[in-house]
Each structure stands twice: as C-alpha cells, then as structure tokens.
Image 1 (cartoon, rainbow, N blue to C red):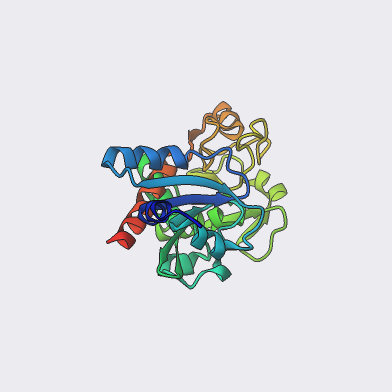
Image 2: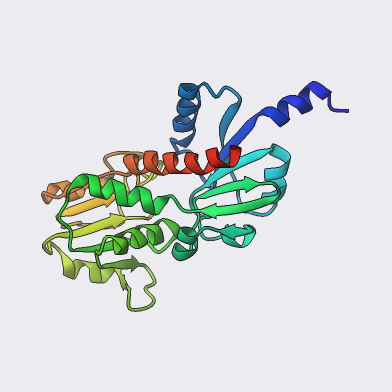
Length: 253
C-alpha cells in the first residue's frame, strides 16, 4: 500500500517535462528550474524524459502526474495523432512542441514559430529570401514564421518533394545571393556530433542555426569564414520556453 503522505505529495507537485529520443544536448531543464526558483515555485519540477517511441504516452502522463510537457526531435509531428486537439498555429504548421494537460485531454501548441520569428527580428537582418534545411517539425515552424514575415522560403531536403523543396546538391547554385538567409532546422551539428555540418561550404550572407549546443556550431564557423552574419538557437530556446510557460501557467489557473 502506498502511504497517504506520498499520494498527497505526488498530487500537489506540478510536474513538467521535455520528451524526445535523445536529450543530452538540452538546456530546457536548467531554464525551467531557474524560472521556478526565481518565482518561488518550489512545488514545480521539470525533468527530461528520453523516449524510444511514443507508445504509452498517455500512461506516462497519468502515472507521473504530468501537467504539461515540451516535445523535441523526432516527435514534433509524430505526436499529433496522440493528442485530443491542436491550437490554430500548431494545426497550420502541422507540428507540436508544447502540450498542455487539461483533465484527461492533451492539447498541442507550437511555440517554435513565434520564438523563431522574434529571434530573427532581433537581428535586424535585411532578408528577402530564405532556405530552410530540413523538413521536420522545426523546419515547418521556421517556414511558417518566415511566410508570416513575407519572406519567401524553400525547404532543402535529402529527398525533395514538391515545388517548395530542393535537394542539397542544388543549394550550391545559390551561393552568395544578396539578402538570403540559410536556416539549419536539422539536428546535424548538435551535441554530441559537434564536428558535423549539414552544408559543406555555406556561402550565404546570413546563417541562423537552431542548434544551441554547441555554439558556435561547425556550420556557423564555416559560414563566418565567408563573412556571414550568424546566430544560434539559444535565444529562440528561451523565447519558446517563455511561451510554453504561458500555456502551462494558464492551465494551472
């Protein structure tokens, strides 16, 4: 029999988490624990949960008393069938990185797009065109944000499909176009694979790598050799976490 004091403590704790397949690179736990300490929320916790698959997701939520959780590679699109509803932004993007738990229902949100948009606006870069490396959940959020900003963009994929995608071998023909942004929305170059880069010779005037561990990435260093202005994804991480907290906080009211 579980002691009553344990049941009471478990019920009172507000538990949040990040799920993904590999989380050794993540700073999310440090960010949220810092926020909870700053706000005096000693009954709030945030943990990292590596999951080999999403099988048993609801049982995990229920058994651990999860109030909300963030989602990272490779589950931002795969998680959608497991949810009860999506907000308008997540539905338009087709990817989720934040889930709130309301009763026994799971609601999906996307804070990546808004965070990327704000972080890019903070650079002051004059951008007229963009290429987005990858076609996963993060890439879809980036493309959504760019189009909201009126910036035409194309996905760059190993297996391009459709008019809005090109192959990596085609990217070389766009070297040094004026006012063009290259965004890395793939996990290539992320810890622990820090010596890898998705593009061998990135000759673009602006490069935004969503990776924040390490920083600078191999892609950023190589682009800087060509004189590019570069930015990592750390500010975006903080911004999307702030937006996620707003969703989590509203569910507590």
